[in-house]
Length: 335
Image 1 (cartoon, rainbow, N blue to C red):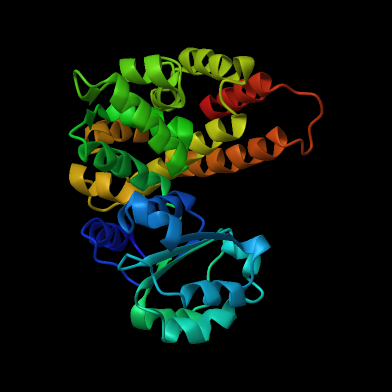
Image 2 (image 1 turned 180 degrees about the vertical axis):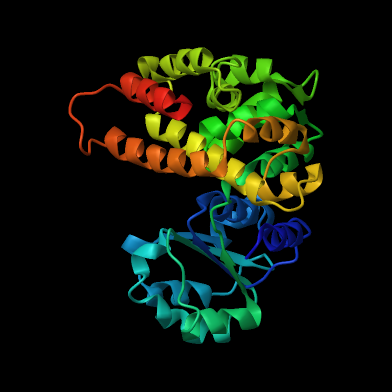
């Protein structure tokens, strides 16, 4: 299920259009938690909850018990809400729900949190839920889609974000939507007067230096500025400001994007931005960087980064600091 479908379901819930079954599964727990919380907030009033809301945990319940709760009728309410958290602990027996979901009690809203796992689409349960309910596969967002996701999250509350500030944030936090959303909420509180988030706000409220971060490191690499690249690497290594694997992943992705740029027949700004997944504002930087790195050189660097990733995890190397590893990598990239 893509984000558009997820947002459609969220919109229906906000408009009190409910399904009797929400099977929330997959790696991206942000949407599993968000949809569950939204149903908690919308289905019942505070007065109705004591009689009509049941929260169960997979390790402490059974499928038979879940079905028993689902077959109860609501009291002084149009609906009852049954939420099963950590339902992945029931994975061996979850198929026993198949008959109930084919003929659910329409006044019951059953919400199943099936984190980090997915249903087998070939089996009965998955197919049967489709008749009356929703199976929502919450997949991890690709990293090149994160800037758009951040911009859209902020737009809901009439905030904007500077392109550089956005990339600083996603480079630092990766594709953990819950972490990103927590930081965005903090920024919204602290930037109420201006409503435009800049690198200064990111530095002040998130704690990422606007001058010494992975975004600036990639820029220094692209310009072949070895001195600046080493200074930034030293900063990132000091006091473990950022795990070395995060830095290596970001540099790796940067060279993948440069490789993609070289491969494009249509190198118009909008096409480059769409294919490599960057804001059109930054395309000019990739154009300039591509002059410094041929496809052959990029292939060598990509293999080099993979080797250094293994070294950072202790393979084929003894007692070398992250600082020295990054310094060595920079020298070899620039050689």
